[in-house]
Image 1 (tube, each protein chain N blue to C red):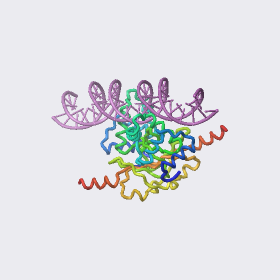
Image 2: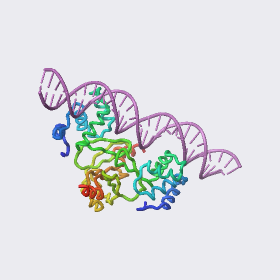
Image 3: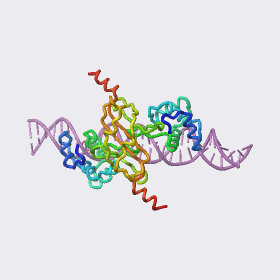
Image 4: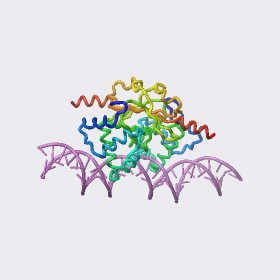
Length: 145
Length: 145
DNA sequence: ATTATAATTGTAATGATAACAACTTTGTTA
DNA sequence: TAACAAAGTTGTTATCATTACAATTATAAT
């Protein structure tokens, strides 16, 4: 998988896997490549719905499931009540600002995490989630003092 | 916070913070110290309910919120549809077996994760979640071949 | 072109969590 | 110890995200 796969890369990838490139699926896929802000289902649905008024939320859920199974999309569950989705990219961590809610990506070497405890485990997926306050919110707080 | 806080440690900690030690709260707290298997609300409620038939699920939710705010309990959201709770212990990662569902703790040095990308961020909380197959399930699979 | 398969849609069901008001317990003051 | 206030508990109801399902529509294959 490429570091920042383009829409065209992803279309090819789906074709290779014999996944139908329906209008709705392409639309969700394109949305995710252009909005790498870890959107929720609701954000995805609401935005695309403006372009495709007939779009159903169920289709968004179905499409995301297909894309996840194909390994093109990754689920982010930092908070239990807000599932987010991301075009799959190389290993990186997620930082959620508890003040403004923004989710930031950050570089991380996942290999550093290999613990002896997991010697005999088959690891399929690694997630690193941090929480705290982002620089912008930190400086806003200082201004308000 | 201690590595493996005992029930008594935790009681003291609550007293220090002026949190009422009601029968129900102590019961939830004791349950968590004795069941360090990352239980869900439902597991906690069902088990304690056997001892305290009048216990309400709302109380379990309320109690968990209080304990989380006090920093004694940590939320684990590996999967978006199953929130789990854990007595707060020193930095460690969580591995969920996709085959049997068991969640394993593993040692990890969270400091290793410090990325230059987060230099100006205030980090309050670090979570590491892995998924895969545990040794037991791996060997079962081989036997069935 | 026809048929079979797959995808989409809208509605209804499910299930976890939160809101709420009534009731009970606890702690405090006299 | 009695009376009061504050806090905690309870059960019900509401909410919201997600899934199940059946009908319809689109796509692919022969």
